[in-house]
Image: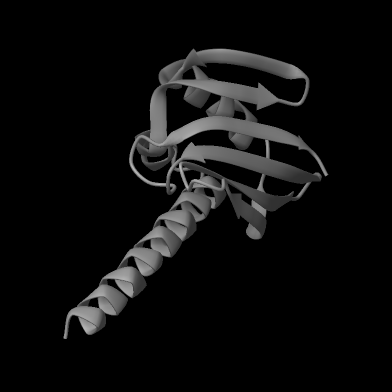
Length: 126
C-alpha cells in the first residue's frame, strides 16, 4: 500500500510540473505578462539578445511585453530540458516562432518551474 501511494504521489508531482511548464509556454505564446510574472523570482537575470541585466521582475516583464507586442507569436514549442544532479535547479529551452523570425527561449529555475521559481530568461535569435 505504501509503495502504491509513493508511485501515485510521484506521478502526480510529475504531472503538475508538466502542467506548470505547459502553462508557462502558453502564457508566453499568448503574451500573458501577468501569468508569466507569477513564475518569476523578485529579481531575475533577463537577457533580450545582447542586453543582459539583473532586474526586478516588473522591469523585466515591461521589457518582455514590449518585445512580445512587436511580434505576432505563432508557436512556442519546448525543445529540450535538463535538471541538475541534486534536482535543485532545471532549465528549459523552447523555440518561439513569430511572423517575423524564430527565437530561442532559455528559462532557468530553482526546482520545478512553478510559482516564483524562475531566475533567468534569455531570448536570442534561433
